[in-house]
Image 1 (cartoon, rainbow, N blue to C red):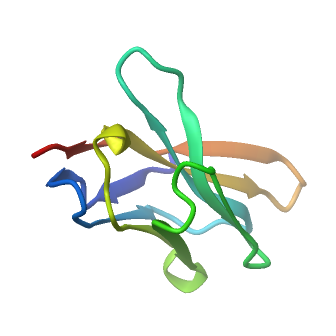
Image 2 (image 1 turned 180 degrees about the horizontal axis):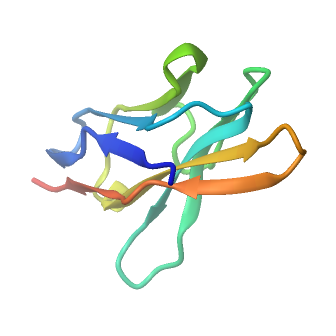
Length: 120
């Protein structure tokens, strides 16, 4: 079973930075999108950023200008650079790969989640 392994979470002060990374345990025929979602206590999971296989990036309005997503197809890795962090960015962050097989089967793969805490 494919595993997505996340790293880079932790604690930061407001205005600080963290970088998250996520790597798949195996290769895929095609990765349609790589992305990050987050879930704060008592809230629903929300998409933060994603990047398509053509390189098109999209961001939630709350992180535009502060977060930058990047993907390395050769390494099956997606990263999220988070700058100017705010307390409201505190959440568990999950990476997600949307993949397609040779038989055109679409699947979503999720990481186990990594905690990001922003406080002074």
